[in-house]
Amino acid sequence: MRLRRVLESLTLVLFASIAAVRGLQNSAGVLEPPLDGDHRRFQWRGVDVAYTEAGEPSDPTLVLLHGINAAGSSGEFREVFADLAADYDWAPEDFVLTDLPGFGCSDRPPLRYSATFYEEFVAAFLSEFDEPQVLASSLTGAYVVKTARRDPDLVADLTLVCPTAVAGPEPPKTALRELLRAPVVGELIHGVLVSKPSIRYFNSDHGYYGADQPSTAWEDYEWQTGHQPNARHAVASFVAGFLNADASLGATLADLNQAGVKTTLVWGREAEITPLAEGRALAEEADCRLVVIDDTKLLPHVEFPDAVVSVLRGGQLAPESAAEERAG
Image (cartoon, rainbow, N blue to C red; front, side, top):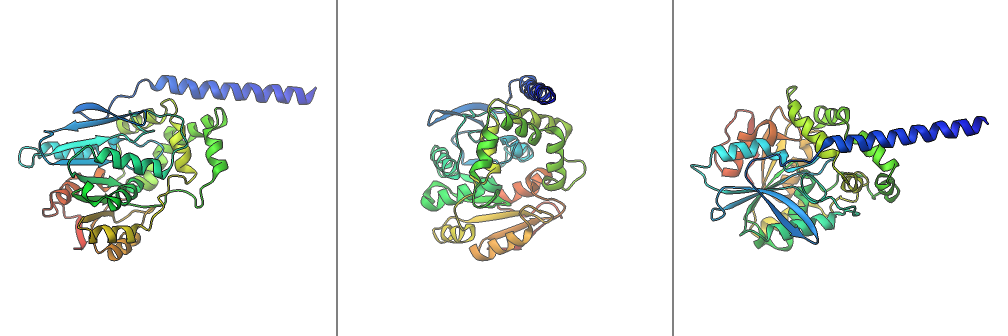
């Protein structure tokens, strides 16, 4: 009798938890693009990929590719986008920002996502443009580097913010991925990962240096994008290590440099997940330019967008907090 009551209680708790998680998904509503501009769709392997374009397609193209995390989206470049748009009159460009498959306003099919999947997507998406300049962050930076190494004519040059080839366990954990993909338990765990306390913890502990970053409105958007249907599947592969890029980033960048594609690395001096020591070693091995920005961690392009835009323009570094440690 006691066992039966325990089982009944556990069942009630389980169903209540499921109802709560799915209620949060329903309350999240339809996700709107985080940036102004022309909102377009790119069809790739049956996946409807969202991207935003601003400027004139006839102008040189700058493609911005966001990093991967539990609440990733093209909105990561919201501050850079605003600065670029403000500078448009004197430096016309065609700005293109995409939500990677499985994130943001793009389709989120229940796939077993992999680094190869994203590398192939990056190659396909960049080939839609005429040798664009590329700005990419974190793990996505490694996908861009591998893609450009296979076809150096695909890009004009690269600016990478705190790039890394590894963001999960090595070797990847199949059991963990399948647990997070599971209909009930996976939904519950994912709900914790994209809860507002978790989002705030990541932002304050790893993402941002400034106490006033990010805004409450942006945290609300991250919560909303994290609660879209099927959001857990790409995150499951990320957390379990299946999105780690199979590459020596320094050696691959060195090869790319030899092929004539110049790379600039941008690093937050206070970065912890990918510390500055890694950036210095990477710049040394690849013989490329390294720009370090004070008072910022993993997201210098959000906290000091003017510095990053200055790097993109190839001009002088605007704020006093930015320093070029290595010319490349």
